[in-house]
Amino acid sequence: MPDEVDQIGTGTLFNYGDRLMLVTARNIFDEIEPEDLVLPSRGTTALHGIGPYFLHRADNSDIDIAIVELRHQPSIDRARYSWKILEFANTATASAEGWFVLTGYPSIKSKRLGGLLGSSLLSLHSGRLPEVPPKAEPPVHPDLDLFFEFAKEGEILDGTKGDIPHLGGCSGGPIWEYREPQGMAFWTPEQCLRFVGVQSAFNPSAGYFRAKSWTYVRSMIDELVNKHPQT
Image 1 (cartoon, one colour):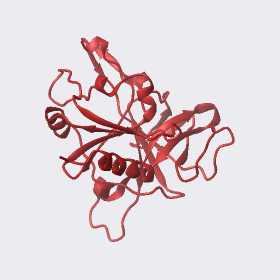
Image 2 (image 1 turned 45 degrees about the vertical axis):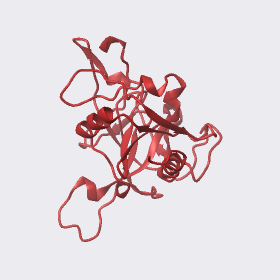
Image 3 (image 1 turned 180 degrees about the horizontal axis):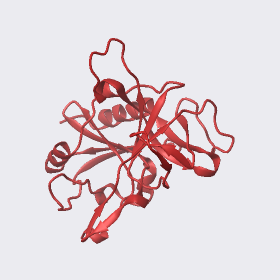
Image 4 (image 1 turned 90 degrees about the vertical axis):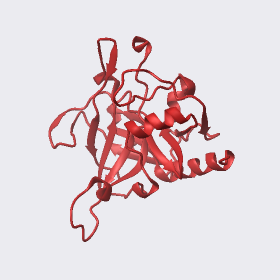
């Protein structure tokens, strides 16, 4: 029933050949099992679980990344119809400086209307912090952890400023870096935005949110594929 559904996190879908991977934060599976996941579908209010899947998490719990491969064809078809599916060409390693955007669905913005659950997309502009914040929860791995400015007020993607909501529900949300290629004839998001990390934690009092680098995401997708070769 819709009233039994809640928003627990955000994820990003990737193609690996003809295989479909959901990239999100490991911590959301501290409370649920993957078989309890429901991916919203375009054009319907019906609820569908993801069906059969492969789940890959690192043995080290500090690596707050989870890869879920969808293995149920109806679920795959619904996901491909309803959402933008990224390719590895849409990714990059984060620059030390630049213009970054966190996207996700804060739970505080969710609403129940007539038994349905809806939410609003947050697109928050931020800058990468040059050093590890003094209050960052250890351990910190320089090649894994990315830290970004998180203030009480910020600029969203349309340029307006306002109070930033609690980021619960954004776990697993993608971090994008904006880069304009040289010689660009016309602007498209695909040319200028690169997926560079997965949001994993935030600390408003310490002024940062934290993400895990795309480099680790890619290596974990490869590990899943090697563990479960296509049949």
